[in-house]
Length: 103
Image (spheres, one colour):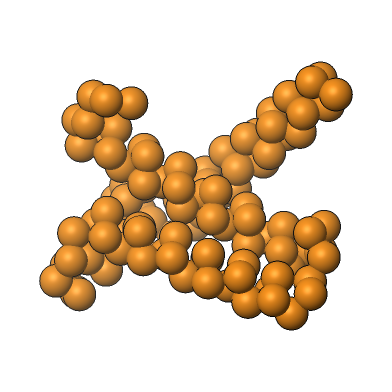
């Protein structure tokens, strides 16, 4: 059981790394946090507040899908879980880039 779980975690992390790299290349030309920094400036927020907002939106979508009885393994729910994990990684990476040393 342990090997299966570690394999699933490795697979999820590899997939997220690839997805985040592709999205960064596609959506921002001036750095991996460019869109969050721009959105923060437009809204009068800090970039991490924008990232937390995105995480909140994903959690709300997941709760809505689950309340509608969507199965754990459905593509819609899996995509939302992947997006949630991606935003959490972006926030963590942003904190590291800003010099937070408690990681």
